Length: 159
Image 1 (tube, rainbow, N blue to C red):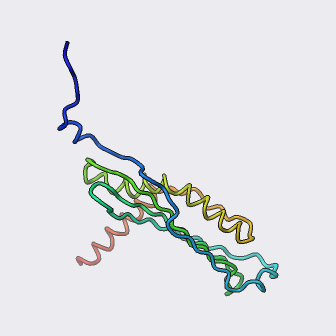
Image 2 (spheres, rainbow, N blue to C red):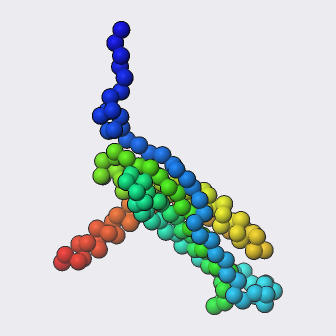
Image 3 (cartoon, rainbow, N blue to C red):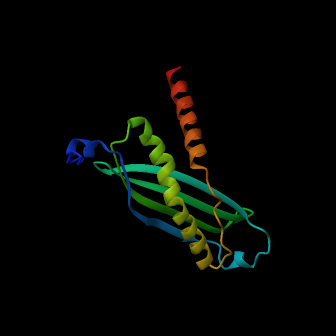
């Protein structure tokens, strides 16, 4: 009878990707022109900005945050401004260097983003407005676009 137990050396080399925690890191709501602007019947303009950042926390542990800023205005007056940052802590070990960027720029944000969408809609609803539902995001396309921009900036600097 042969024992095919995994040796510690083999175990150490196995890729690891685990979600440790997903949490709301920051949330703010401003209504600087209330209550007067609430009586305005014009349709507001809505501007939504998204950002992704990844930060090492410990050896093999990373925080990945997705931030949404929703700014609604009527003319030049703000109706409301919401900023939310949803964080996730991920254990990522034994991945090749060329895979780390895509994992932290695509896979992790895809996990965190649905929580951010829910928190943004909830915060806006609690403020007394119809919810703003953030659209689904193709984080792969967003990541690839950022890589192209970084390459162009690097090329511009070296010229």
